[in-house]
Length: 328
Image (tube, rainbow, N blue to C red; front, side):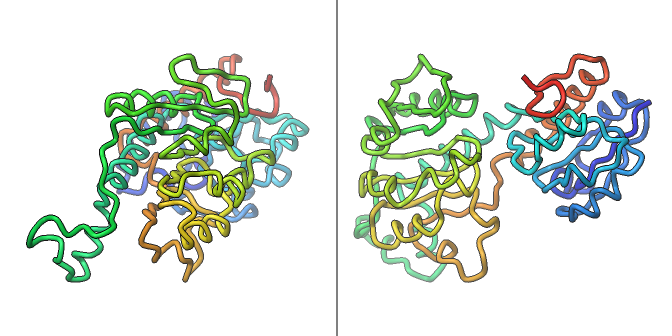
């Protein structure tokens, strides 16, 4: 029997216990302790972890040094793990695992949804209708200056797109006749799509720039004013990775002055944007509340994968280790 705590289930299972956690319970051999709020403080997290061996978290900062000595495994229920101090975990003998590919298809679908919306200005037209503006309807030709174009022959550039999400996006984009361009900071390559010579090359050639790199000191503000100026004025930026990878102030300026045509943002910095942020009102922005991973099937797949991570750890062969004890 292994004691485990899900410290913020409210971010995962928020539909009246819709998720089936049976597999997780079977792996533990004991009932799972869960707290159904979203964002507990580090002090609250430390208290909740008392007496538990395994900690399951979702996109909430964990003060590793404040955890009780009983904790030997932290399972981040997601791909990103910038909320956990890996050096502190290693120093305390704690293993940290993530789930790297559970949402690849769902996030890819969201990216393509942004692309399709921008190609025919669906969101902007709907906003006009919501305001009572029906001027587009009498002749069906009064689109004014709203973008309306086919995707065939257009280029989607994937920043950090050599992973599972990028692969899925590339496959779908090809169906629409799009060209796929990839650049990554990592040594990982992707033979399926054309590799840009560098980030600037990708920015200059792409009609859609989609960001997929993890957040780190090296990628924070990767897409800044200089990068945005290298994009085509007709191009769109899509971010489904982490908000701070894009400098938000620089982006707002670029969206306001027409440096780029628009942006689809499933992640922001901060998240959500502060009250009164221009992102809420800019006509050329589609804003979503970090929904890329939130489809019901995706979340179920995630929790099943967390169970597999715990099972492997208990068997002495931990998988998906990103830091702490057992990290490569």
